[in-house]
Image (cartoon, rainbow over all chains, first blue to last red; front, side, top):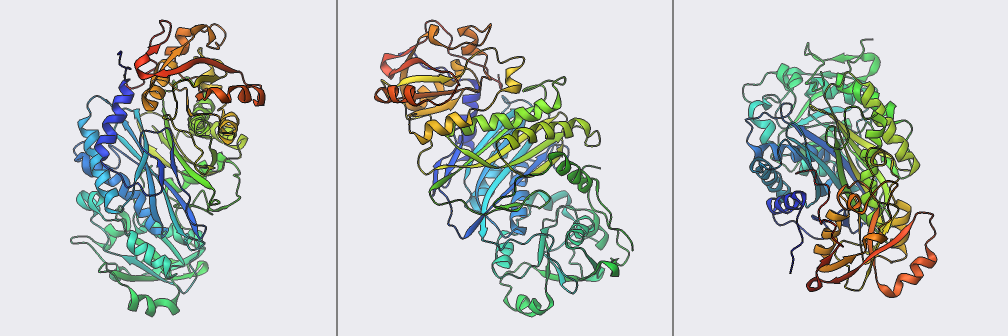
Amino acid sequence: MKKLPLSSEDLWVHHWIAALGRQPSAGIRYSLGHDCAVLSSFPKNLDLVLKTDAVVEGVHFTRSTPAPLAGRKALARGLSDFAAAGATPRAALITIGCPNPRSARRIRQAYQGLSRLAKKFHLPIVGGETVRTRQLLLSISLLGTVPQKTSPSRSGAKPGDILFVTGKLGGSWPHNHLSFTPRLAEGQWLVRHKFPSAMLDLSDGLGADLPRLARSSRIGFTIHPNQIPLSPRATPRLAFTQGEDYELLFSVPKKRISALLRQWPFSTQLSPIGTCLTQTQGYHTGGLPLRGYDHLR
Amino acid sequence: MKKLPLSSEDLWVHHWIAALGRQPSAGIRYSLGHDCAVLSSFPKNLDLVLKTDAVVEGVHFTRSTPAPLAGRKALARGLSDFAAAGATPRAALITIGCPNPRSARRIRQAYQGLSRLAKKFHLPIVGGETVRTRQLLLSISLLGTVPQKTSPSRSGAKPGDILFVTGKLGGSWPHNHLSFTPRLAEGQWLVRHKFPSAMLDLSDGLGADLPRLARSSRIGFTIHPNQIPLSPRATPRLAFTQGEDYELLFSVPKKRISALLRQWPFSTQLSPIGTCLTQTQGYHTGGLPLRGYDHLR
């Protein structure tokens, strides 16, 4: 019997499905190897959350970055945004752009790094796409859920609210930006208990992300530089300008602070770093610059 | 009052949200400008459908392709996969990779072309991402719905089923691959009336896509070359090898054929091109080559 030919695209799809390994299958009708992924729906009391994020060689990692860490970072960044939304990731799609699809080793390693992190969060990879590009690129799209009408935005902070950050800031390069753990558990807990009036994840540094929260919420703020929790060898200036900390920044109404501090169940450090003001009271940072990492500059 | 600084990324986000124009807002809690999009859930009798697809300059379009058409193609390809799944698109995320984010004209035009097609299908663009790449790249992720347990896969064709295609094949370059209308209405109708035992969209040509259907369904087939509906100046060989027709290929059980032909409500041409056989009966194409366009070759 004549065998049906496999195109190099078909072979490639087989190859990368193998690299991803066995995927969680609960609630999934069609997954890898189908044109579209099909999932059974989620309960009515959950909202759906969508996010896409991409990392590119030469921008978010270098040619010498081990491929498993590049793959890991591609997924971890999107999960960090999910953390800030209080969302639970339910399915991921991966797009990979690669200079030479026949030199498959680096790609396979990237998939493996990504897949390992996905497994840690019981997140199935349900589909993907491979294209030819001049530099390695990994793009992730995530579907998730959050209890109905609970996901905080950037715009709910009020004058008088206290600003908190999780973990330690600054010093993300050369290592932490490749190995950080997205604060999914912390973000989900905060949202479930309705503590944050506004929340986002610190991807570009306090100096860039804090103005985003303030602009959306139409507030001013005062930051106490000596209360910023710092990584070893980091300075408050680094915490403001370096970016890639992937910690959570959020505001909490004053009357909820003692409950938050009492109930916080994580070993992750929780630090009040300032207070929300009215816009006319302005922006006070003790001299730290209101600019962060700007990857399009 | 001191003004808060906007990073070039912030400015860019403002810029491209403007280029996309007003978006449908029903059922959408957070959309463009938020870290994650948040949507209210869909009824329990609908399955969720996910797809990601990317187009790259130098592969799927050229440097001289008008940007609105490149943007349009990026979305149209994903919608063609949705058509084959019988799915209704509900939300789209766009990732754009661009060599120089400050030369914004081409990018804005790409968004506009994409946005125009999205509006035609009442599809809201709810989020996106911009990264720096060495060549223009547009990646789309789609969330949609399909009536529970109705979406066909490639694997349901049975010996004796008749193979159909929509529209006309061949001759997709230089124009049709940039201007085709995804067969969403036809795909949704076929699935709602449970005609296809298997379905996919013809992106790489019959010579590549037919073996995919046959391999998944573990069937053989016979194709009648003189029954293949051809675009002006196309040949059966072009229909097999050229790709980018974005028509639907599907199998229908014999006893359902007369109902299909009687009820088909579209002006789109509907053509029986062959019959499914057992695997041992083999693959018969009247001499046409079982290979299509292979973009990774």
